[in-house]
Image (tube, rainbow, N blue to C red; front, side):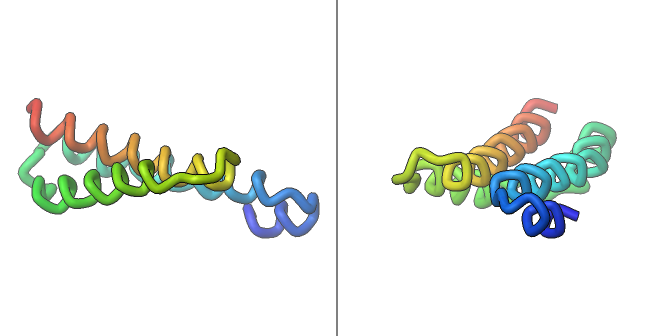
Length: 88
């Protein structure tokens, strides 16, 4: 759907935003599972994900939506998982 809207409207940021929204919605089951049983998730794995997301944030050079939004979304999602895993 995101790619079709991107092609139809000629605006790549819409495709990027919809793709990121899909990723956020897709995280919902992981959050719920982690709240119920944090042992289902690997703390080390999520910590590595977080570090890579943090480094991606530091590597942003262009201040455009397309360059900032994906690393920011992944950083936020990984940070939320670390919070759930280490504070439960």
